[in-house]
Amino acid sequence: MMPSEPDLPDPPPLVVENLKTAAVSPVWFLRPGLGEMVVLTAPKEEFLHQLSRSLLGLDQPFSGEVRVFGRNLFKTGERESALLRQRIGAVAVNGGLIANLRALENLLLPVIYHRGMSAVTQQQADTALARVGYDASPETLSGLLSLFQRKQIALARAMLMMPDLLIYDSLLLGLSPAEQEQLLAVTTEFHCENSQRISLFLTTSQNLAARIPAAVRVFLAKGERL
Amino acid sequence: LSAFLQLTLQISTKMTALANPAVRRVLVKQIYFTGFEAAPVIIFIALTIGTIIIAQSLLLFGSGNASLTARALIWIVVREIGPLLTALIVIARSGAAIATELGTMKINGEIDTLAGLGISPLSYLLLPRISGGILSVVALTVYFEVTAILGGFLVASLGWHLPAEQFFQGLYQAINLQQIFVSGLKSAIFGLIITVTACLQGMGIGRSATMIPQAATRAVMNSLLLVFMVDGLFAILAEIFATR
Image (cartoon, rainbow over all chains, first blue to last red; front, top):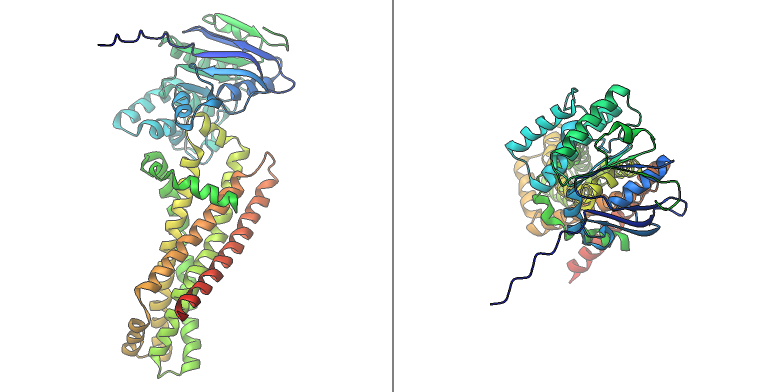
Protein backbone atom coordinates (compact mmCIF):
# COMPACT_ATOMS: atom_id res chain seq x y z
CA MET A 1 0.00 0.00 0.00
CA MET A 2 1.32 3.42 -0.98
CA PRO A 3 1.91 5.82 1.88
CA SER A 4 -0.53 8.71 1.73
CA GLU A 5 0.85 12.08 0.71
CA PRO A 6 1.36 14.49 3.59
CA ASP A 7 -1.17 17.35 3.58
CA LEU A 8 0.28 20.44 1.95
CA PRO A 9 -0.14 23.66 3.93
CA ASP A 10 -2.91 25.95 2.63
CA PRO A 11 -1.56 28.73 0.43
CA PRO A 12 -1.78 32.25 1.89
CA PRO A 13 -5.25 33.67 1.11
CA LEU A 14 -3.90 36.80 -0.53
CA VAL A 15 -0.51 37.62 -1.96
CA VAL A 16 0.10 40.86 -3.85
CA GLU A 17 3.59 41.15 -5.22
CA ASN A 18 5.09 44.14 -6.95
CA LEU A 19 1.67 45.06 -8.28
CA LYS A 20 1.21 48.10 -10.47
CA THR A 21 -2.37 48.45 -11.61
CA ALA A 22 -1.59 51.12 -14.21
CA ALA A 23 1.43 52.88 -15.69
CA VAL A 24 1.09 55.60 -13.05
CA SER A 25 0.11 53.93 -9.81
CA PRO A 26 1.66 52.88 -6.51
CA VAL A 27 3.48 49.58 -6.30
CA TRP A 28 1.57 47.31 -3.97
CA PHE A 29 3.00 44.56 -1.80
CA LEU A 30 0.66 42.75 0.51
CA ARG A 31 0.50 39.42 2.31
CA PRO A 32 -2.04 39.66 5.11
CA GLY A 33 -2.12 36.88 7.68
CA LEU A 34 -5.17 34.80 8.50
CA GLY A 35 -7.74 36.69 10.54
CA GLU A 36 -6.21 40.11 9.95
CA MET A 37 -8.03 43.35 9.33
CA VAL A 38 -5.91 45.49 7.06
CA VAL A 39 -6.37 49.16 6.27
CA LEU A 40 -4.80 50.17 2.95
CA THR A 41 -4.46 53.87 2.47
CA ALA A 42 -3.68 55.54 -0.84
CA PRO A 43 -3.60 59.20 -1.79
CA LYS A 44 -6.07 58.78 -4.62
CA GLU A 45 -9.45 57.05 -4.86
CA GLU A 46 -8.54 55.91 -8.38
CA PHE A 47 -5.58 53.82 -7.13
CA LEU A 48 -7.82 52.01 -4.66
CA HIS A 49 -10.46 51.30 -7.26
CA GLN A 50 -7.82 49.89 -9.62
CA LEU A 51 -6.39 47.77 -6.80
CA SER A 52 -9.83 46.45 -5.90
CA ARG A 53 -10.44 45.46 -9.53
CA SER A 54 -7.08 43.71 -9.74
CA LEU A 55 -7.76 41.80 -6.51
CA LEU A 56 -11.08 40.62 -7.94
CA GLY A 57 -9.40 39.59 -11.18
CA LEU A 58 -11.35 42.10 -13.27
CA ASP A 59 -8.42 44.09 -14.64
CA GLN A 60 -5.13 42.58 -15.72
CA PRO A 61 -2.37 44.29 -13.70
CA PHE A 62 0.10 46.55 -15.49
CA SER A 63 2.87 44.55 -13.80
CA GLY A 64 3.31 42.24 -10.83
CA GLU A 65 0.96 39.55 -9.64
CA VAL A 66 -2.05 38.90 -7.42
CA ARG A 67 -2.63 35.42 -6.02
CA VAL A 68 -5.89 34.72 -4.25
CA PHE A 69 -6.00 31.48 -2.26
CA GLY A 70 -2.82 30.48 -4.08
CA ARG A 71 -4.19 31.08 -7.57
CA ASN A 72 -3.76 33.83 -10.12
CA LEU A 73 -7.30 34.69 -11.23
CA PHE A 74 -6.07 35.54 -14.72
CA LYS A 75 -4.58 32.10 -15.17
CA THR A 76 -7.51 30.04 -13.93
CA GLY A 77 -10.39 28.69 -15.96
CA GLU A 78 -13.89 30.14 -15.75
CA ARG A 79 -15.18 27.49 -13.35
CA GLU A 80 -12.24 27.80 -10.96
CA SER A 81 -12.28 31.59 -10.94
CA ALA A 82 -16.03 31.49 -10.17
CA LEU A 83 -15.30 29.19 -7.21
CA LEU A 84 -12.51 31.46 -5.98
CA ARG A 85 -14.69 34.57 -6.29
CA GLN A 86 -17.33 32.94 -4.13
CA ARG A 87 -14.77 33.11 -1.33
CA ILE A 88 -14.28 36.84 -1.84
CA GLY A 89 -16.80 39.39 -0.67
CA ALA A 90 -16.62 42.89 -2.09
CA VAL A 91 -18.39 46.13 -1.28
CA ALA A 92 -17.79 48.64 -4.07
CA VAL A 93 -17.55 52.37 -3.57
CA ASN A 94 -21.07 52.85 -4.99
CA GLY A 95 -22.38 49.59 -3.52
CA GLY A 96 -22.08 47.67 -6.78
CA LEU A 97 -25.71 46.64 -7.16
CA ILE A 98 -27.57 45.64 -10.32
CA ALA A 99 -29.90 48.57 -11.08
CA ASN A 100 -32.74 46.60 -12.66
CA LEU A 101 -33.02 44.24 -9.69
CA ARG A 102 -34.82 44.97 -6.43
CA ALA A 103 -32.87 45.21 -3.18
CA LEU A 104 -33.81 41.68 -2.13
CA GLU A 105 -33.00 40.26 -5.57
CA ASN A 106 -29.57 41.91 -5.40
CA LEU A 107 -29.03 40.50 -1.95
CA LEU A 108 -29.92 36.95 -2.95
CA LEU A 109 -28.42 36.90 -6.44
CA PRO A 110 -25.03 35.27 -5.71
CA VAL A 111 -26.53 32.82 -3.22
CA ILE A 112 -29.25 31.69 -5.61
CA TYR A 113 -26.83 31.55 -8.55
CA HIS A 114 -24.19 29.51 -6.72
CA ARG A 115 -26.20 27.54 -4.16
CA GLY A 116 -29.87 27.64 -5.15
CA MET A 117 -32.79 28.98 -3.16
CA SER A 118 -34.12 27.37 0.00
CA ALA A 119 -36.26 28.36 2.98
CA VAL A 120 -33.03 28.83 4.94
CA THR A 121 -31.74 31.31 2.35
CA GLN A 122 -34.71 33.60 2.91
CA GLN A 123 -34.15 33.41 6.68
CA GLN A 124 -30.47 34.20 6.25
CA ALA A 125 -31.36 37.12 4.00
CA ASP A 126 -33.73 38.54 6.61
CA THR A 127 -31.05 38.13 9.29
CA ALA A 128 -28.39 39.80 7.12
CA LEU A 129 -30.70 42.75 6.39
CA ALA A 130 -31.41 43.14 10.09
CA ARG A 131 -27.70 42.98 10.92
CA VAL A 132 -26.76 45.78 8.56
CA GLY A 133 -29.71 47.82 9.83
CA TYR A 134 -31.47 48.05 6.46
CA ASP A 135 -34.90 49.54 7.10
CA ALA A 136 -36.24 50.35 3.61
CA SER A 137 -38.45 47.98 1.63
CA PRO A 138 -36.56 44.95 0.24
CA GLU A 139 -38.75 45.31 -2.85
CA THR A 140 -37.31 48.73 -3.75
CA LEU A 141 -35.41 48.89 -7.03
CA SER A 142 -31.74 49.35 -6.21
CA GLY A 143 -31.52 52.44 -8.42
CA LEU A 144 -33.90 54.18 -6.02
CA LEU A 145 -31.85 53.43 -2.90
CA SER A 146 -29.57 55.94 -1.18
CA LEU A 147 -25.81 55.37 -1.18
CA PHE A 148 -25.96 54.15 2.41
CA GLN A 149 -28.76 51.70 1.62
CA ARG A 150 -26.88 50.43 -1.44
CA LYS A 151 -23.81 49.83 0.71
CA GLN A 152 -25.95 48.09 3.33
CA ILE A 153 -27.35 45.72 0.70
CA ALA A 154 -23.89 45.11 -0.78
CA LEU A 155 -22.51 44.35 2.68
CA ALA A 156 -25.41 42.01 3.49
CA ARG A 157 -24.90 40.31 0.09
CA ALA A 158 -21.22 39.76 0.86
CA MET A 159 -22.04 38.46 4.35
CA LEU A 160 -24.52 35.91 3.00
CA MET A 161 -21.76 34.19 1.03
CA MET A 162 -19.62 33.81 4.20
CA PRO A 163 -16.43 34.88 2.39
CA ASP A 164 -12.89 34.22 3.58
CA LEU A 165 -11.65 37.50 2.13
CA LEU A 166 -13.53 40.80 2.23
CA ILE A 167 -12.63 43.86 0.21
CA TYR A 168 -14.21 47.16 1.19
CA ASP A 169 -13.53 49.79 -1.47
CA SER A 170 -13.94 53.21 0.21
CA LEU A 171 -16.69 51.81 2.42
CA LEU A 172 -17.28 55.02 4.34
CA LEU A 173 -17.00 57.49 1.47
CA GLY A 174 -20.07 59.71 1.12
CA LEU A 175 -21.71 58.57 4.36
CA SER A 176 -22.70 60.55 7.44
CA PRO A 177 -20.71 59.95 10.68
CA ALA A 178 -23.60 57.90 12.13
CA GLU A 179 -23.85 55.76 9.00
CA GLN A 180 -20.08 55.28 9.01
CA GLU A 181 -20.13 54.08 12.63
CA GLN A 182 -22.99 51.70 11.88
CA LEU A 183 -21.20 50.06 8.93
CA LEU A 184 -17.86 49.91 10.75
CA ALA A 185 -19.48 48.17 13.70
CA VAL A 186 -21.11 45.56 11.44
CA THR A 187 -17.94 44.90 9.44
CA THR A 188 -15.83 44.53 12.58
CA GLU A 189 -18.34 42.18 14.19
CA PHE A 190 -18.63 40.11 11.00
CA HIS A 191 -14.85 39.91 10.68
CA CYS A 192 -14.45 38.60 14.22
CA GLU A 193 -16.95 35.76 13.65
CA ASN A 194 -14.36 33.78 11.67
CA SER A 195 -10.79 33.63 12.95
CA GLN A 196 -9.49 32.91 9.43
CA ARG A 197 -11.28 35.77 7.69
CA ILE A 198 -9.27 38.63 6.17
CA SER A 199 -10.82 42.07 5.78
CA LEU A 200 -9.21 44.70 3.57
CA PHE A 201 -10.32 48.30 3.96
CA LEU A 202 -9.22 50.41 0.99
CA THR A 203 -9.43 54.08 1.84
CA THR A 204 -8.04 57.54 1.19
CA SER A 205 -8.86 58.53 4.75
CA GLN A 206 -5.77 58.76 6.97
CA ASN A 207 -7.72 58.24 10.18
CA LEU A 208 -9.68 55.10 9.34
CA ALA A 209 -7.06 52.83 10.93
CA ALA A 210 -7.47 54.68 14.21
CA ARG A 211 -11.21 54.02 14.07
CA ILE A 212 -10.74 50.26 13.71
CA PRO A 213 -8.86 49.18 16.83
CA ALA A 214 -8.73 45.60 15.55
CA ALA A 215 -6.82 46.63 12.42
CA VAL A 216 -3.38 45.16 12.83
CA ARG A 217 -1.60 46.64 9.86
CA VAL A 218 -1.71 49.88 8.04
CA PHE A 219 -0.14 50.44 4.65
CA LEU A 220 0.44 53.80 3.15
CA ALA A 221 0.87 53.78 -0.59
CA LYS A 222 2.51 56.90 -1.92
CA GLY A 223 4.14 55.54 -4.98
CA GLU A 224 7.04 53.95 -3.16
CA ARG A 225 7.55 50.34 -2.17
CA LEU A 226 5.78 49.60 1.10
CA LEU B 1 -20.25 37.84 -38.62
CA SER B 2 -17.40 36.05 -36.85
CA ALA B 3 -18.39 37.68 -33.54
CA PHE B 4 -21.98 36.60 -34.19
CA LEU B 5 -20.96 32.99 -34.81
CA GLN B 6 -18.57 33.01 -31.87
CA LEU B 7 -21.23 34.22 -29.44
CA THR B 8 -23.77 31.75 -30.83
CA LEU B 9 -21.28 28.93 -30.31
CA GLN B 10 -20.41 30.10 -26.78
CA ILE B 11 -24.07 30.34 -25.85
CA SER B 12 -24.78 26.86 -27.21
CA THR B 13 -22.15 25.43 -24.85
CA LYS B 14 -23.81 27.15 -21.88
CA MET B 15 -27.33 25.76 -22.30
CA THR B 16 -27.12 23.77 -19.06
CA ALA B 17 -27.00 27.09 -17.18
CA LEU B 18 -30.73 27.45 -17.92
CA ALA B 19 -31.27 24.96 -15.09
CA ASN B 20 -29.84 27.54 -12.66
CA PRO B 21 -32.73 29.21 -10.77
CA ALA B 22 -31.17 32.69 -11.02
CA VAL B 23 -30.78 32.32 -14.80
CA ARG B 24 -34.34 30.95 -15.12
CA ARG B 25 -35.68 34.12 -13.46
CA VAL B 26 -34.01 36.25 -16.13
CA LEU B 27 -35.35 33.89 -18.81
CA VAL B 28 -38.92 34.23 -17.51
CA LYS B 29 -38.58 38.04 -17.42
CA GLN B 30 -37.25 38.06 -20.98
CA ILE B 31 -40.13 35.89 -22.23
CA TYR B 32 -42.56 38.18 -20.40
CA PHE B 33 -41.12 41.37 -21.95
CA THR B 34 -40.56 40.02 -25.46
CA GLY B 35 -43.19 37.33 -25.84
CA PHE B 36 -46.06 38.40 -23.61
CA GLU B 37 -46.03 42.20 -23.66
CA ALA B 38 -45.68 42.29 -27.46
CA ALA B 39 -48.65 39.95 -27.98
CA PRO B 40 -51.40 42.64 -28.18
CA VAL B 41 -49.46 44.57 -30.86
CA ILE B 42 -48.78 41.37 -32.81
CA ILE B 43 -52.42 40.29 -32.60
CA PHE B 44 -53.70 43.68 -33.77
CA ILE B 45 -51.28 43.81 -36.71
CA ALA B 46 -52.01 40.18 -37.62
CA LEU B 47 -55.74 40.83 -37.64
CA THR B 48 -55.28 43.83 -39.91
CA ILE B 49 -52.91 41.99 -42.26
CA GLY B 50 -55.21 38.94 -42.42
CA THR B 51 -58.18 41.11 -43.30
CA ILE B 52 -56.19 43.01 -45.95
CA ILE B 53 -54.95 39.82 -47.60
CA ILE B 54 -58.45 38.31 -47.66
CA ALA B 55 -59.97 41.53 -49.00
CA GLN B 56 -57.36 41.76 -51.77
CA SER B 57 -57.73 38.05 -52.60
CA LEU B 58 -61.51 38.41 -52.85
CA LEU B 59 -61.05 41.30 -55.25
CA LEU B 60 -58.64 39.20 -57.29
CA PHE B 61 -60.40 35.80 -57.22
CA GLY B 62 -64.04 36.84 -56.58
CA SER B 63 -66.17 36.01 -53.55
CA GLY B 64 -67.19 32.62 -54.93
CA ASN B 65 -63.63 31.32 -54.70
CA ALA B 66 -63.12 31.09 -50.92
CA SER B 67 -60.88 28.04 -51.25
CA LEU B 68 -58.36 29.93 -53.36
CA THR B 69 -58.54 32.88 -50.96
CA ALA B 70 -57.65 30.53 -48.08
CA ARG B 71 -54.73 29.12 -50.01
CA ALA B 72 -53.40 32.60 -50.75
CA LEU B 73 -53.73 33.50 -47.09
CA ILE B 74 -51.77 30.43 -45.97
CA TRP B 75 -49.19 30.93 -48.68
CA ILE B 76 -48.54 34.55 -47.79
CA VAL B 77 -48.95 34.48 -43.99
CA VAL B 78 -47.30 31.19 -43.03
CA ARG B 79 -44.51 31.23 -45.60
CA GLU B 80 -43.61 34.91 -45.59
CA ILE B 81 -45.41 37.61 -43.67
CA GLY B 82 -45.83 35.79 -40.33
CA PRO B 83 -42.18 35.22 -39.41
CA LEU B 84 -40.98 38.40 -41.14
CA LEU B 85 -43.43 40.91 -39.63
CA THR B 86 -43.10 39.33 -36.20
CA ALA B 87 -39.32 39.67 -36.45
CA LEU B 88 -39.65 43.33 -37.47
CA ILE B 89 -41.87 44.09 -34.47
CA VAL B 90 -39.48 42.28 -32.09
CA ILE B 91 -36.49 44.14 -33.57
CA ALA B 92 -38.23 47.46 -32.92
CA ARG B 93 -39.38 46.54 -29.41
CA SER B 94 -36.78 44.21 -27.93
CA GLY B 95 -33.65 44.45 -30.08
CA ALA B 96 -33.09 48.08 -29.19
CA ALA B 97 -34.13 47.46 -25.56
CA ILE B 98 -31.65 44.60 -25.05
CA ALA B 99 -28.77 46.59 -26.56
CA THR B 100 -29.62 49.63 -24.43
CA GLU B 101 -30.02 47.65 -21.21
CA LEU B 102 -26.77 45.73 -21.62
CA GLY B 103 -24.92 48.88 -22.68
CA THR B 104 -26.14 50.76 -19.61
CA MET B 105 -25.13 47.85 -17.38
CA LYS B 106 -21.68 47.83 -18.97
CA ILE B 107 -21.16 51.57 -18.46
CA ASN B 108 -22.39 51.39 -14.85
CA GLY B 109 -19.91 48.60 -14.10
CA GLU B 110 -22.68 46.09 -13.40
CA ILE B 111 -21.21 43.49 -15.77
CA ASP B 112 -17.97 43.66 -13.76
CA THR B 113 -19.96 43.43 -10.53
CA LEU B 114 -21.48 40.17 -11.75
CA ALA B 115 -18.06 38.83 -12.77
CA GLY B 116 -16.69 39.82 -9.34
CA LEU B 117 -19.47 37.79 -7.71
CA GLY B 118 -18.39 34.74 -9.73
CA ILE B 119 -21.48 35.04 -11.94
CA SER B 120 -20.79 34.52 -15.63
CA PRO B 121 -22.32 37.43 -17.60
CA LEU B 122 -22.60 35.06 -20.55
CA SER B 123 -24.72 32.58 -18.58
CA TYR B 124 -26.65 35.08 -16.48
CA LEU B 125 -27.25 37.94 -18.94
CA LEU B 126 -26.84 36.73 -22.50
CA LEU B 127 -28.06 33.13 -22.43
CA PRO B 128 -31.55 33.90 -21.04
CA ARG B 129 -31.95 36.92 -23.33
CA ILE B 130 -31.06 34.88 -26.41
CA SER B 131 -33.05 31.76 -25.46
CA GLY B 132 -36.00 33.84 -24.26
CA GLY B 133 -35.86 35.91 -27.45
CA ILE B 134 -35.88 32.82 -29.68
CA LEU B 135 -38.79 31.22 -27.79
CA SER B 136 -40.71 34.50 -27.84
CA VAL B 137 -40.28 35.10 -31.58
CA VAL B 138 -41.47 31.54 -32.31
CA ALA B 139 -44.48 31.96 -30.00
CA LEU B 140 -45.33 35.40 -31.41
CA THR B 141 -45.13 34.02 -34.95
CA VAL B 142 -47.67 31.34 -34.00
CA TYR B 143 -49.97 34.04 -32.52
CA PHE B 144 -49.51 36.10 -35.66
CA GLU B 145 -50.29 33.30 -38.08
CA VAL B 146 -53.29 31.94 -36.17
CA THR B 147 -54.74 35.43 -35.66
CA ALA B 148 -54.14 36.49 -39.26
CA ILE B 149 -55.82 33.36 -40.64
CA LEU B 150 -58.75 32.94 -38.24
CA GLY B 151 -59.22 36.62 -37.40
CA GLY B 152 -58.96 37.57 -41.05
CA PHE B 153 -61.56 34.95 -41.91
CA LEU B 154 -63.94 36.19 -39.19
CA VAL B 155 -63.74 39.78 -40.42
CA ALA B 156 -64.09 38.68 -44.06
CA SER B 157 -67.04 36.39 -43.33
CA LEU B 158 -68.83 39.23 -41.59
CA GLY B 159 -67.99 41.83 -44.26
CA TRP B 160 -68.10 39.77 -47.44
CA HIS B 161 -70.05 36.65 -46.31
CA LEU B 162 -67.16 34.34 -47.18
CA PRO B 163 -68.44 30.70 -47.20
CA ALA B 164 -66.77 28.96 -44.23
CA GLU B 165 -66.84 25.44 -45.65
CA GLN B 166 -64.98 26.37 -48.84
CA PHE B 167 -62.53 28.52 -46.90
CA PHE B 168 -61.57 25.80 -44.42
CA GLN B 169 -61.35 23.23 -47.19
CA GLY B 170 -58.85 25.51 -48.90
CA LEU B 171 -56.95 25.85 -45.62
CA TYR B 172 -56.62 22.09 -45.17
CA GLN B 173 -55.44 21.68 -48.74
CA ALA B 174 -52.90 24.48 -48.56
CA ILE B 175 -51.29 23.85 -45.19
CA ASN B 176 -48.83 21.05 -44.51
CA LEU B 177 -46.27 20.10 -41.87
CA GLN B 178 -43.34 21.22 -43.98
CA GLN B 179 -44.70 24.77 -44.19
CA ILE B 180 -45.26 24.88 -40.44
CA PHE B 181 -41.77 23.53 -39.80
CA VAL B 182 -40.12 26.04 -42.15
CA SER B 183 -42.10 28.88 -40.57
CA GLY B 184 -40.98 27.77 -37.08
CA LEU B 185 -37.37 27.36 -38.18
CA LYS B 186 -37.36 30.76 -39.84
CA SER B 187 -38.77 32.49 -36.77
CA ALA B 188 -36.26 30.70 -34.50
CA ILE B 189 -33.39 31.89 -36.71
CA PHE B 190 -34.83 35.42 -36.74
CA GLY B 191 -35.04 35.31 -32.93
CA LEU B 192 -31.40 34.21 -32.76
CA ILE B 193 -30.32 36.98 -35.15
CA ILE B 194 -32.19 39.71 -33.26
CA THR B 195 -30.99 38.77 -29.78
CA VAL B 196 -27.39 37.87 -30.62
CA THR B 197 -27.01 41.12 -32.60
CA ALA B 198 -28.48 43.15 -29.75
CA CYS B 199 -26.28 41.40 -27.16
CA LEU B 200 -23.14 41.96 -29.25
CA GLN B 201 -23.92 45.65 -29.66
CA GLY B 202 -24.82 46.13 -25.99
CA MET B 203 -21.75 44.31 -24.67
CA GLY B 204 -19.49 46.05 -27.18
CA ILE B 205 -20.06 49.48 -25.64
CA GLY B 206 -17.00 51.21 -24.23
CA ARG B 207 -17.04 53.70 -21.38
CA SER B 208 -19.05 56.54 -22.88
CA ALA B 209 -22.80 56.98 -22.46
CA THR B 210 -23.07 58.44 -25.97
CA MET B 211 -22.32 54.97 -27.31
CA ILE B 212 -25.61 53.58 -25.94
CA PRO B 213 -27.99 55.10 -28.54
CA GLN B 214 -25.45 54.31 -31.26
CA ALA B 215 -25.38 50.67 -30.16
CA ALA B 216 -29.19 50.53 -30.10
CA THR B 217 -29.37 51.94 -33.63
CA ARG B 218 -26.72 49.51 -34.87
CA ALA B 219 -28.55 46.61 -33.21
CA VAL B 220 -31.76 47.54 -35.05
CA MET B 221 -30.11 48.19 -38.42
CA ASN B 222 -27.89 45.09 -38.36
CA SER B 223 -30.82 42.90 -37.30
CA LEU B 224 -32.99 44.28 -40.10
CA LEU B 225 -30.27 43.66 -42.63
CA LEU B 226 -29.60 40.10 -41.45
CA VAL B 227 -33.28 39.20 -41.13
CA PHE B 228 -34.03 40.34 -44.70
CA MET B 229 -30.92 38.54 -45.99
CA VAL B 230 -31.91 35.28 -44.28
CA ASP B 231 -35.52 35.67 -45.45
CA GLY B 232 -34.28 36.07 -49.01
CA LEU B 233 -32.07 33.03 -48.59
CA PHE B 234 -35.06 30.99 -47.39
CA ALA B 235 -37.06 32.11 -50.44
CA ILE B 236 -34.25 31.05 -52.79
CA LEU B 237 -33.86 27.69 -51.04
CA ALA B 238 -37.63 27.12 -51.15
CA GLU B 239 -37.57 27.82 -54.88
CA ILE B 240 -34.68 25.39 -55.42
CA PHE B 241 -36.37 22.61 -53.43
CA ALA B 242 -39.74 23.24 -55.12
CA THR B 243 -38.31 22.90 -58.64
CA ARG B 244 -36.48 19.62 -57.85
